[in-house]
Figure (tube, rainbow, N blue to C red):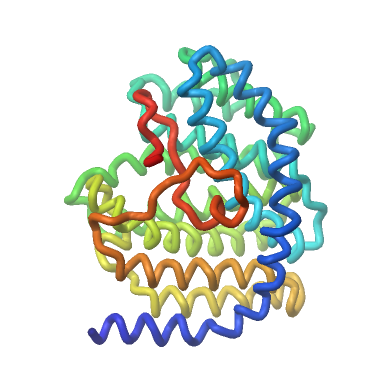
Length: 326
């Protein structure tokens, strides 16, 4: 009971972050619909061309990509507001969708040569798709490249190469004997660089100081995501800091408050209001997830309502097409 009380107090200390909730509401009411419209124009045709011959796969991909786009779009919109950079809904939709198909390929599709071929793609070398899903991944990647039109040494590409190394290592999280220190290292690398890559879509030539700050943010977001998925990860035998009971939401809440101080120093006071409100909502959700029965995880959805997409579990792309609950 003491742990629950500590976590509750930690969440309570973050209540001032709720001041930015009107920005989250504006996102749900207005911005998310704009992103969904751009998704239909930019991403949906790539899905149709790449996997349209398999209707079930096409439907799963569209629904998983749309849900991911709405969720990630909130974070990217908050970053753009905080950093004072333009928000590009097309890059948000492409980057979110690429992230989803990339994660699902690495996690759900068993091809021994896939890791090396993806590493070659991220080094700017040729990539020959071996399946419909790989064709979709390549189409999204090329569309991002074309829209970015940046040199190979830009932050986005160097971060993606480093991120791929951690994604390969994340398969070790299926081993129940994996030490906590290794789980924490992989979590920080995967989450920190994953978020940095998405935000780098909006910021050419990111500085080392900002890169370090966003890796910290990405680590926190990954930890929060692990708490949200704790029931599913327990069920599937995936080892995360949350399934191991670490670091505790009280500690995580302290990290979030510390991040806000760093945001104020780097970007200016008050510019993180929308992003901070998103973190607060995720923190409250993580607390609720910890009280949820393990046999009743949040279900995925095929809805097109922004609010439902934002607060439901995202479906996945799987070889058998069983990545959605309904």
